[in-house]
Length: 64
Image (cartoon, rainbow, N blue to C red; front, side):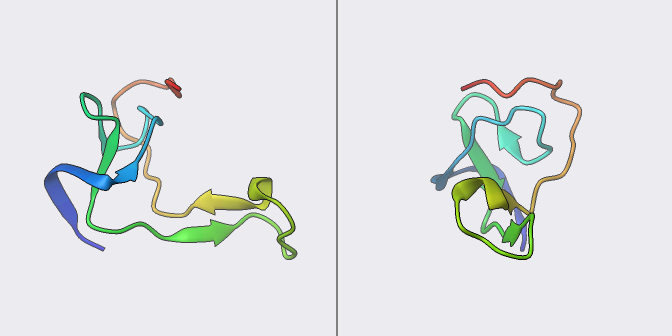
């Protein structure tokens, strides 16, 4: 996974507290992301997460 200096329009993101968030374009600046599980059995969306998330200094809002 590598970080780009500009937004990747293929990865939409509204989590402004992530270090890889592009605030103006609501996209991720990574070339790719990794999706992970939050439980041992995945039966719905709530059991998954963006495993590429890294807390940044953009605040703590999840601006939807």
